[in-house]
Length: 511
Image (cartoon, rainbow, N blue to C red):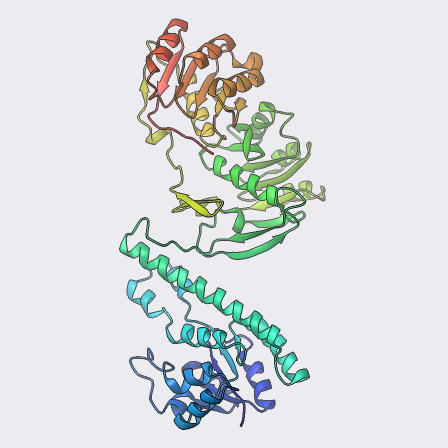
């Protein structure tokens, strides 16, 4: 009996030479719709599926392959006597190769202003059914969902006369990954359409961007996956202009840097080490902003990741080239800046479209045995319920320092304290087990620069000891959420020392 291959694809890249080779190997080609038309026009002999089923395509093509004559051929155990007898009774012939890819649902919903009707019509039903049936029956059926596998399959058919069980198993696994991802897009779209916030089951899908040399440490295997249809303002979609591949830690730090720098409208520079800001500066020019970020902590910035929110010009590039940096991220680089910076072989230069930023719906964090999801923390100074709770109001310069500190501190690991003036961070205390400990680290780093500066806290003061430490260092203004049962103690202490204190009503824990 002549072997048969069923070809029905929306992506026709590479299909014609694949079909021609199958035909030359003696396969009968079955097909439908546009695929059949394409093959016939190019001289490939094709049998229409409706000739096999004895039933025409109906309902605008919604029903064409959902038929026992097709699915019996896909699911039959070809060496099972009962299956063979039933196939003979019903006139079902086996199908040995299936090549199907699906309606472009992801591409459809990614279009601006796509209608619900158009999205629904691009949910494939027959395609996934054929793929899943073929993949389930991989002992007998070779199933292809990816055009990059055409050559590999043809190679085995030509040399061995058939594909190996190992190949068929791998191809089947790829099919189920593909259909699972496809269903994730569909379920996500419909869940959003229905307005369900936390459905009883939540499925995400990601696409491999690159294998990584290792994870956080050399003994840990790692890879980088990107989330389809997410914001282009992402390290996953950055364009790398120069330098070696990013590492696991590079990606984490780079992501932290762009999340901070997007907080600022003025020219800004952010230096990050171990996912915490070590220096943040703003200025009238990008060079001025970077000078401030460097001045904030000239020790920690060494080997750091820099994010800038303006095109990097020659003057800024000259300053950047003076120290060792792992990565520089910006919306763009001038030709002169690229020429200067690429003299350093190992530095990575990345561009991302700052104007394409859109808020992610969820932050996802893995824990052993599960996932935690939450809305991103997008609350900023403008969203806060700002109240001056002390006798003294902040001066204009203190307000600017408080705004800068509040923008920075929400991106610092808790417990978090930031000391700032109106243009830069002066000290950062991150990830401490108590708040006054974080304050002492930040104040110690700021040193003499703390005099007349502002202190920002990501959460309330449980005691007045942080206000005491701030006064001793010379801090004159504080911003914090408030909400402690001992708020009055901190307010009283601030009034005693003439410190202006502002409550925001918004906590910014970051674990």
